[in-house]
Length: 108
Image (cartoon, rainbow, N blue to C red; front, top):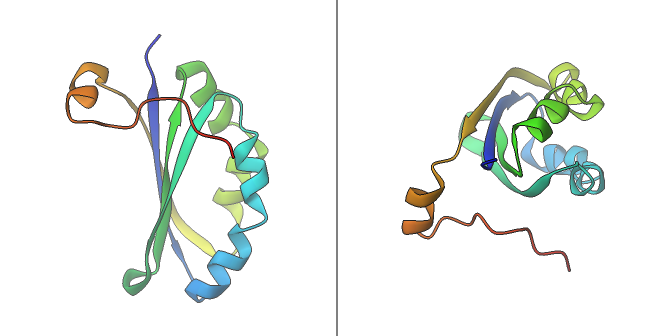
């Protein structure tokens, strides 16, 4: 099975400081998502847009994530609109050739 990426983006209608405050408690939940190797947090303050890149071990874990209470939280949070979730297969050989970080996440 190959690894998979989920790209999620959404608009936020609060300040970026408030956004970080809202998201901080979710870090622990995100660390416990089954099959998740890592997440990269994204923000574009000038466009009030945020999101993330999620790397999963396989498509089964992606499907579990997409139907999880955490995903439901993002899609129904009153401060988030225009939630877009796009799962992708990863071209592993090509990604490795360009030094893409496909290894397991590092836990400190």
